[in-house]
Image 1 (tube, rainbow, N blue to C red):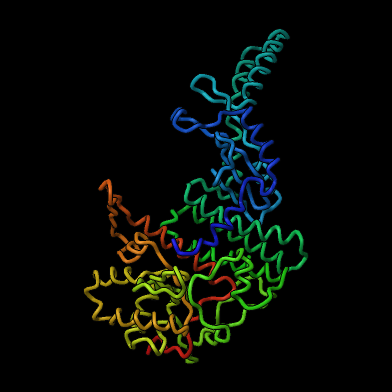
Image 2: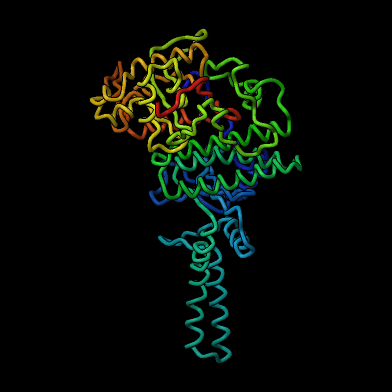
Length: 474
């Protein structure tokens, strides 16, 4: 997606089965193989069900599939997050849910639980003994028929009732997203084990709430329709991780050095203003991100408010090269940067109003989306000269007069960003002549990836829109 590897991808890779305990995985895998069928892809029947290994966690559980080649699964088959505030009956229900999954025994075309077959056999023996002792058949027969049915179907009913206290996600894209958030939360839990600070324990509580709310959101909506809210939640989890790290091991140096240490030496994604212009890092006493005040964002003190907060503009531009082999062809800035006095006005203020009105906090809006909303660009003259405004924004970024997330998007990703939300991009193979169509779902994936990069860049310090900003209503 960018010239630099996505930092969150590296974090998510740490959420492997049973963490750093390969022996536990091997024991569970051996037990699962003995008691079930390992799916081998094309050689299996259409109704083949994979063997699952359940890993219990402090916040829920994860069901992993068992690959046939003996490797570790790359992503969970199912992720469940239990309610962070549970009563005693709810805790008992959660313990029932987190039990080890029962294996199924195939009897012809029917699959039953092992307990059902055992109870059926015991019921036959008990029925025979009861008949021998003169118990009426009208009592023995219904009992013998109901006992196996009760054992087979009662756990499903209990699961349904207990499942009200958990949010279970099974869709592939949703599991992949929740896996990244769970990896961040796992880091918070591990930090709390070695620290008795209230701030760290509070960060774990907030992280659990975020996981539960995110799982609830993913149960009701597809990642495509909830992308901006998901990006905002991931940004919060990253900020919690950074601030918790600062509490346990106070960083040495500025915010850039702290980010460099937190994410394994990942390089910055583009030019940022010099140190003296940056706002200081939040105090280690804060455990949740604090929204910037008007003074912190250099907004005028006239009582005016933004229509919505923390909206971002994503726009493509002519590539430039701040360093060797580093191409920057797309930039993302805070919406308030459009109010900078060095940006063409009142065009910038009008685009700011269009950009922020009716948006959700944390939403990333490509310039092409604004063009789509303006009847395909026919009404741009009523708003302003977007070419002059984006040229001024790019000059601000290069002069380090505002913060920006600078990206080097590949051709397809850049084309999707420059297209409308319902447009298609066709890529034709240069040799075979075949083509592939990229659509709205691929565009959403690009924006989700940009959001993950933004969450990493903003961890501990939101994007700075610049100094001396104009009033939005000017």
